[in-house]
Image (cartoon, rainbow, N blue to C red):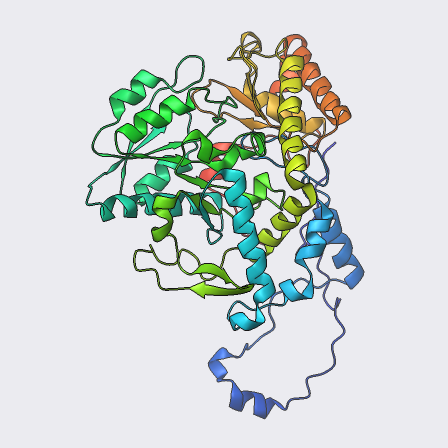
Length: 483
């Protein structure tokens, strides 16, 4: 049963205070002399008036309506919403890290520079790259940096390469990044089995090909087994391979993008290396490159000589800065703690468990939902509501019904080349019991679709608000309270 929660303005009672501050000891005349009258408020701000206890209870009640990894299973496909170890939070709050200022002299920031330098070495080893920059602060920002590097590389060689090839299963950021960088996107169709169509790729490349942007495993949750042939086709045409690292949680410790033939790779530290994720941030998208692209990396580069760390700004071919300082440092510290805690064997085990969990979900659910690809998946699996379609039940209905059972829905309607897609990524941090509970609810919803479709189509029925008009909510959002 839904219960409306009063807005904090509606709870206001004149005269109640949540603060007990002493009277201002600065004379009004002195205030007026320091601050021009036009900047002084002439009447009190129309803020709600509540007691401290009511204020605390109000916000605690609101916080309980939030959903996150710490409160429940979060199976978003292509997003890797896994548990964030709390030791990472403790480490990033060490005063020597948390209170550091990026404009301090390098002599007083040696510990932070050492951490950044070592993190670059770790990511280079994990990815099979020759150098890494930690500057990009999100995956899309990493993509932007990577494509700018590729463009600078071609221009330095005197080549006018203007086209970026992306598969039709690509993340939406891939074609967007190419466009922002002033390049043209060329889309190629996938083979019916979900893999890149080699013939279509061969037909698309040419002297104007700058790069192929690819995710492996792909956004279909499938490994591109022809990756070496793909790399040869692109390299023979003079192009470079860009690796979208969104799905790296399936391969870390198992196989390296650099060994597959990729020239540039971005990592999402907030996905693969277990740091807070969502709500527009925080994020981190370091870029790794092969040797030929090192001269173009953003400046400054962190150097190490005789155990002393410094910053190299003397890089004439650099694309320049892509971030104010050295990246989203707090996220990098968390990811550093994660890598040091896990070690090589732990990272490999995480990938193995992520793949195992996804295939477990796929094997348990493919009889109740349609599986478009008859093969093992990697760290995420794709299902559809094709079996529920005869009852008038769509993927959106299934996602809404999951809310009634207390589960955050998986990604829906992506990849867009799969009609009515449900994309489930359980990650390696969920137990078998958690997966079994989710699977049981999904199977229950499949039964409900056949026996009581109206219940599923009208869901959710137990949440604070019912089903929204999503089109109006997106186009005409109400973001301000009006009395």
